[in-house]
Length: 157
Ligand code: HEC
Image 1 (tube, helix red, strand yellow):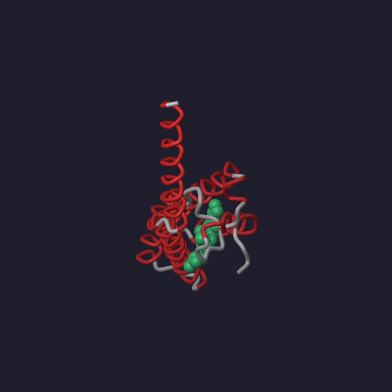
Image 2 (image 1 turned 120 degrees about the vertical axis):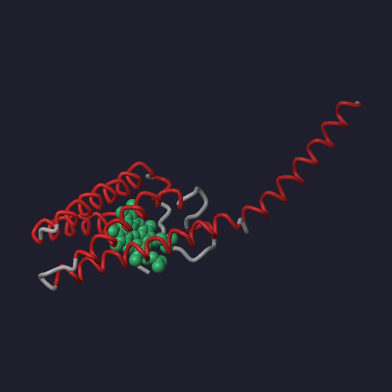
């Protein structure tokens, strides 16, 4: 009988704790922060990509501007995965274009992320070299890596 009461109390406590945790998850600030951080990071990656593409278009890219952009892109690409914690998809209630498929097919998603990193590193090597044809080819490969992931894992709007 004493044990029975203890169990009841334990159960009531568990329910109370679960209730609190449930509320905390719904409003988890670290989830909102991760979503904000990944959007900001992708935005900077997009800016780097634009800088490099605009320079390539001139036919005589300014190496002083494409080199730091390529380096920044590599740094940002290498840190991007950590901004996709479980629970930061559409179910978070936050404004995000990340599809639920990211977490149900995480292997494909993380491979797409490393494909971007590999392509970004190749672009950095090409900008270090400074040859226009190599930079153009590396930029195109990287652009395809962006598109491959967006087509599969990002909502249109
Ligand atoms: C592995 C998948 C993946 C790769 C690779 C990827 N992206 Fe994205 N990108 C996403 C997802 C998912 C979002 C939506 C993020 C969100 O809304 O939470 C996004 C959002 C963006 C955004 C919008 C950010 C904002 O302000 O909301 C830009 C710009 C962007 N990506 C550019 C790029 C560029 C440029 C590349 C390639 C150099 C790239 N992305 C590579 C998955 C990817």
